[in-house]
Length: 261
Image (tube, rainbow, N blue to C red):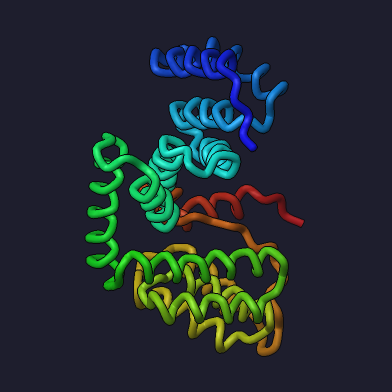
């Protein structure tokens, strides 16, 4: 069951107009009380998603667009905007899923359907050129990769390694999977396997700074010694390489600023 309320829709449309004019304070004043009183309304979630997307807060936008399509799975515009938010986050698998939903659910002559088809064509070409595989295979590999990430967060190191191996079977050109496997092996006290995994990550991308930093840490472990330092989740290619930042320089500065004991 979805909540249909013409008054709410008119208010959200008004907020969307304010967002287009970049009058974000006015838009928030409309959307916030609506969200408080109707937290399960798909159109309000859509409005919130657009609000955060315009402000460049794509992670928050994704949460609201996901909720909108969860409540109303046939909401084509929400699927499309979800795909655009994933694009901004460099989440190729998320883009592929969202734009395919648009093509599947939308009217063939709709502008959003045309745009989604164009996006998918570009995506398919890019994935083939960069990864040497088709989009379906890439998405399945990413599913295993995300499973590995989830298992790492739970401290299930061996199961995470198995998930990364499945991912690499489908897409062997992902340095992050090898880098994360290296961390898992280091956590298990398997230094040799960890070093081998880091080396494989760097064979794919010699400039993958996260693997460089983690390899330096693992090198200091004694045989059988398990890595105990907390694992920090880093989206290197989005937050560092894309923005021209240096992970190694920032980590070095952090260590420099730590007080001596």
